Image 1 (cartoon, rainbow, N blue to C red):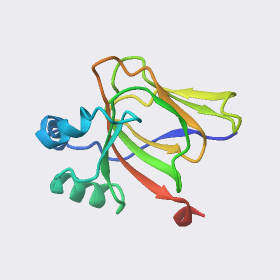
Image 2 (cartoon, rainbow, N blue to C red):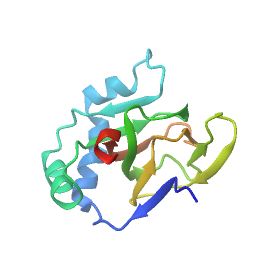
Image 3 (cartoon, rainbow, N blue to C red):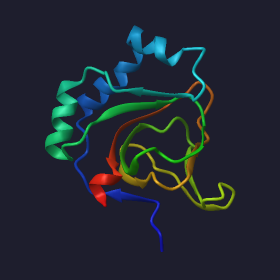
Length: 155
């Protein structure tokens, strides 16, 4: 049986670092990205968030990967993540009570599985499989710490 998302037993991100990451949203430069009227995708990748303590903690306690913050402003369409086999995710805020990630067959029509990733859980997901994110509540964001595992690194 194919696994689409699996919880991982990794250390919980310290509360003060979660608070620092959540505070990034209120930064005026980040607000400009979030409110950009030309954004077609509803997704903001915050590679440039200045969180050195969090990055150091992640590299030392989880894995030495390229970590960033991601923010979904609304539901995400069906897609595969380019050049990515798996994605490691720690959801800071799911964006509502009914947010789910759904996985599809290659026809993009046949629903294979629906997962609620929850809050403050480590999950590794199959990013090479078609998936979408649905149920983000109006005015809320799905906000996560994430890193991708490139296909060339995992075979």
